[in-house]
Image 1 (cartoon, helix red, strand yellow):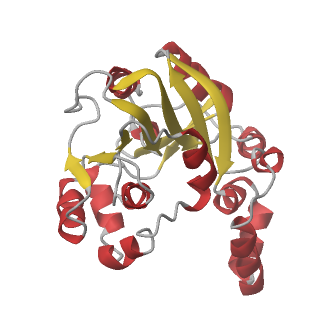
Image 2: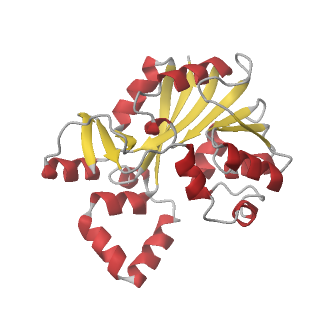
Length: 261
C-alpha cells in the first residue's frame, strides 16, 4: 500500500528492507551464474549514464553494491571500482566467486575511506529504504567524493502516472511502521534533497519502464498478467532506448547525476 509522506514523496509499505530481506532475495539465484553475465562489462540500462559521467582517472565507489554485478562490470571495463554492502553474507559470497573484486561489508554512514578519495559515487536504489531519511548517507558520500566528483544516485520515481493513480485513490498521510519498505520521490524532490546536502544536480535518466507502468496503470498490469505475447513484447520493448521524454511519464526509477559542491 501507499501513503503520502509529502506532496512530492510517496511511502510504500510492504516489508522492512533490512539486510535479512536482501539476503533472502539475492539467495534465490545462483550467484556465480548471475555474475557471469557481467564479466564482459555489461551495464544494461546504465551503460549510457555510467560511461558518460563516471571518471576513469579516479576511483569509483558503489555504495550499497548488493551482489556487486556493476562493480564487476565496471572493473571489466577498466575502472578502479570499489563496493560497500551491509548484507555481510552476500559480501562473503561475492568474494568467494570473484575474489579479485574490491568489495567489503560496511556501513554507508561511516565509510572506511579518506576524505576526497573517490571521483565517482554510485547509489542505485538505496537511500529510499531509510525512514529517517538519507542525511547521514549523503553527508558521508560528500565527504569521500573529491570536489566536483560525480554522484549517480537512483530512487523510485513518483512519476506523473503514479501520481495520477494515487490521487484518484485519495490516499492518506504516511507514518512510521514496521512494514515500511521505501519512498518514491519526484525528480524535483530528490534533486532538492541533493542540493540541501551540497550536491549540484545536472542530469536525469529514467529507467525500468515496464515495472513502472505495471504500478501506475492497472489496465497495463491486467494485460501483462493475462497475455504471454504482451509480456514478451514489453520485455523486448524495455530493452530499447526509449525516449527519455516518454520514460519520465511512468518509469519506476529515476537516476540523478550530480556534482559535489
